[in-house]
Image 1: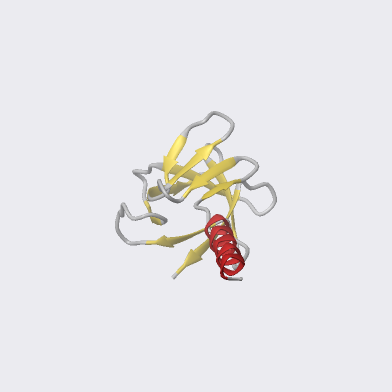
Image 2 (image 1 turned 60 degrees about the horizontal axis):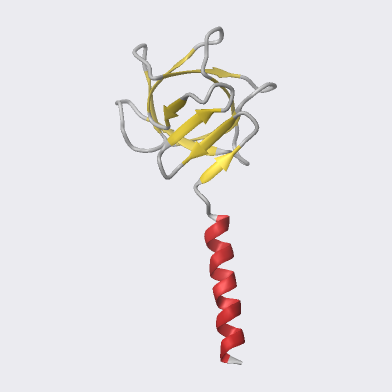
Length: 113
């Protein structure tokens, strides 16, 4: 009986660990929260998941849809440049360019306060 209990407990723990995986593979991008990176599948280019960004509707690295729920990632917008995961600062001196697009997007982003 003890063996069965511990086997079931072990299975539950392993499934919980798998469910909280830190690598999310979407149709066009791979988000790696452990390494705090996002990779474009089309060319394999990897970007940090923090830093400075610029909104550019013509020449962009990613198309994002801003959502209130069911997001792929949550980001915080800062008044300063940060190197903490998912913290971004809008700047003309950017690391990544994004296009805000509700119809054709690469990932869904929720902005935390």
